[in-house]
Image (cartoon, rainbow, N blue to C red):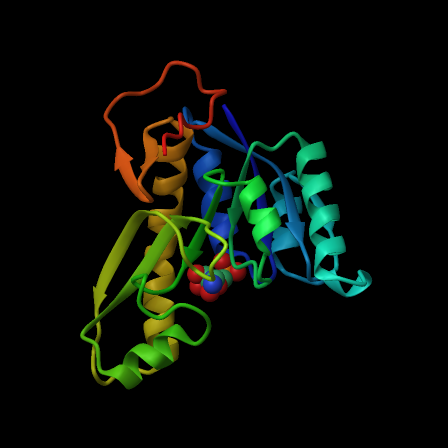
Length: 215
Ligand code: GAR
């Protein structure tokens, strides 16, 4: 069983999708703790309802990004988690933190990466006139919304829809692909080779090994 920490900043609908997946029989991951940098993030309530330990580490309480991330790293490690899922965690993490969790930290982003990194993705997609939008789960590299892509889902854009409507439709897809990506990683079927993902059919026997990362 792979032990996971989830980091959130907001509503936590992706967290909910991960909680629901982990509750299913035979799912190979377990959420040990949910961390939020925002004290009143609704996702904390979702975790508590599911009986999952929570902790607020408010970045505003720290003098520097480095100090905040050092504390975050210490607490995540102390929780026993071996894998991090960023689920609407809206702080940029610096290279030191990211490299400590290299190929052990997943993120979900509401665009077809590498297109539309950053914020306001659906507004920008509509503005650009692209025909498709979607979402991506990837391992986290130090660059913003970057890293080896584990899975993606695509949706055709309706030219008459608003950014909010599109975002809501993409969010539904996020809830499908994030648990799927976590399952693949937790089963040890995901390898990183030359910054790209290879997914094997082999279910590695030892579930305590996150993934045999090969670079
Ligand atoms: C989701 O759409 C997620 O993809 C996005 O924030 C939202 C969080 O919603 N993340 C990013 O934009 C990261 N760059 P949620 O709190 O309901 O899961």
